[in-house]
Image 1 (tube, one colour):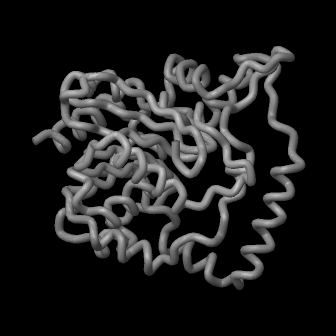
Image 2: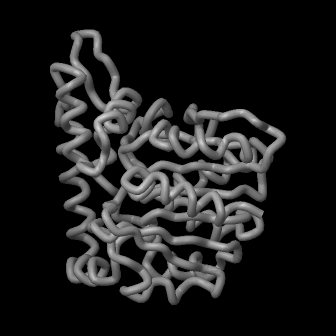
Length: 281
């Protein structure tokens, strides 16, 4: 339980081994890590949470999902299970959460891998800064109204939802897409399928930490940190755009050819080999 919400996580056993948290990205789910967890569970106590509003975790009744709330949930997971210092491997939104947590509590994170988790690039932040805050807030109100009025997208068959999953990441094998879709959808009473995540997650709130506050947290991270990027992703590489300069000297970066935003799926074998070596003692 965190913030009066029941949250779900998958525990892969081996409780006497060192704790390893695998944290998924936005509009994803914890079972996205199954292949990685299967490979690492013999050496680690692997714990894979579903973020609130995702997977089998509860939704926020008001549909409001500030980033700091996710960071608090991660802090509560570590605190309630008593697993500090933990090693964390995280993707996208999960990486953003993990980086902030590691900056808030440097002593509670042993090693950290963040796959494309730094958020908007400096260029994108400059573009966003051109619009007054009141316009960002009004735009968010509009998106919230749209989300509340929008009917949940339903697919007539599992195969139709599967096609949409595969469309979102063409690097996935068909077997990968089947597995991810199976754990991402609800089979509704009328026979249709719909995604488990809260539709309000499409409306990201504008009242987040400032870029300066984020950089302050990055600079407080003390554990060995590996940033991972896909060469074919839309995300900006922080080694090239200057964001790595805000970390201490204990950060490194790997970029993968023939990989998009989901590097841990697109180049699975190479990814697992790399992180297994990086997080090992």
